[in-house]
Amino acid sequence: MPCPDCTRSSRLAGPPALPKSIISTPPLNLDTTNRNPTSSEVTYLKDIIERAQEAFLIADEGSKQIKSVLDGWLEQRAQLLRIIEGHKTILSPLRRLPPEVLGEIFIAYLGVGGMFAPILLSHLCSRWRIIVLDTPRLWSKLNVTITSSNVSRMRSALEVYLARSGQALLDITIQHQHYLSNLLAPQAHRWEHINLNIPPDLHLELIPLLKDRLQSLKSITLVRKRRHYIRLEEYEDARLIDCYIEAPKITDVSVIGVYHLPLPWTQLGNLKTPVALDKCHNMLRTAEGLTNWTVELLPPTDISHPPSASFQHSRLTSLRVDFLYESAAGQVGFFFSVLTLPSLQSFFLDTNANPGLLDGEMHVESQRSIVSFFRRSSPPLVTFHISLGMIPDSDDFFVNCLQCTPKLVDLQIDIGYSNKTMITDQFMRRLNAKYPNFILPNLERLSLIGCMRFTSKPIAAMVASRMPAATSLTGSVAILQRLSLDLVRVHKSSPMEALRPFISDGLHLQCRVTGDRTGPPLSHLGCPM
Image 1 (cartoon, helix red, strand yellow):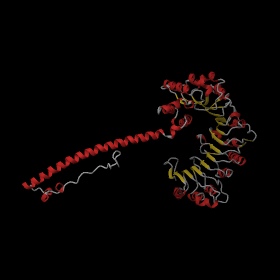
Image 2 (cartoon, rainbow, N blue to C red):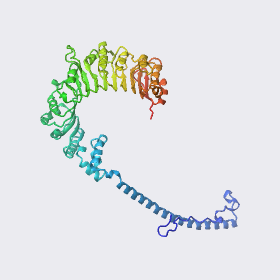
Image 3 (cartoon, helix red, strand yellow):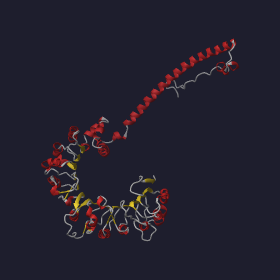
Image 4 (cartoon, helix red, strand yellow):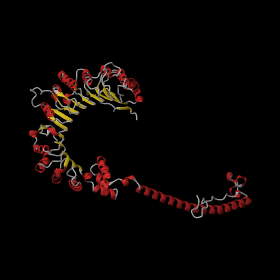
């Protein structure tokens, strides 16, 4: 490297070569024997030591000079790196982002950082702090769990958040025990989403404070903790519900623990609520705009009257039905007997939610009603999960339902761990893409849970018919991407070894086969990247 002052090379010279007289070995190999040196040899050795010490002092001084120069270079190098990185930071694209864009990024971060994310962001730098304090929406999401030990701290936090949120609409989740109604209720005109999980006596505090003030409310989740579901007439804070249903913009309602509620049905797009079996049809008929319905069916108030006339709901795309009472075994068909849902894309049917339904038989009339529902609707189902504590008399029930859903992509069948077995080799053959009348050409994900009776060869043949090598020949069959088996008492051999070769074809395979409902976790046999 040339010197910046004189342009001469600034390469440092190395040390001079040591004289041979210093680096020569002791005479007569005195270093390898214990022989006592002679007087002439002593004089010779002392002379070498003296000259080596002189050379050592020169080398030591030179190394100190080199170290000093090296330290200077290293310090200058570090200083230049700091200058480079500092100036690069100044040129960072992040600094050029407008405050409004950074504010939107911070708002997106709320989903990761939680309620206290604005506080963390405001402590990183002065510019970010100014942006955080000038973005009211960052302070509008309140997720508060209040207990007797943190009331004072949460009150202070709420006061800060409410002040900094300005006039932004509020997304509030309140959990348990202590409710600071004097802080949140005055802001009721700003409530957009509210999730209340508080005791009834605290609900009652709100009633006089909310009347005609919920003009911005769009969704509500109301949890009434109790061991059993109660009717509205038994619900001591029913007046609170009346307040919420006066909200002109409300579209999403989720109520847990209360049923027979008067709701603004024509406004609703998403609804989760318990309902008596004989009331569900009128509820759905009234909610003409409903697209997503999660219904927990409870004992009917009057089952003596037949279902109402058949009707079609053309907007419902997602339905989840949970049967929560033991006498439902003979009444499952009542729910489906009059429904036609031609737009249904996601369907979840669960009768395992009540242990009293396990190991029972699904009545023939119920099976016929469900099959007729599928045939009437011919829904464009993409996802179908069915969990049955009540077992149909054969797997023809599943075939008859599924042959009406050619667009199905995701299928899960859970028949529980009962004494009966279901899903036979015949069912696997109907899924085999080489079978003349096979079903579900678009199936990509299949999950089977419980006591199955199929053997290894048919399921292996079914999977082979849906692997890339086979589907490339037809072009009309989707590739099976994921297969999950959680099986009990499989007839004959386990299918695991027969399915293992398909992992190399890209199949994500999970499999557990045990003699009872206990056993090792699902084995992740294959998970292609």
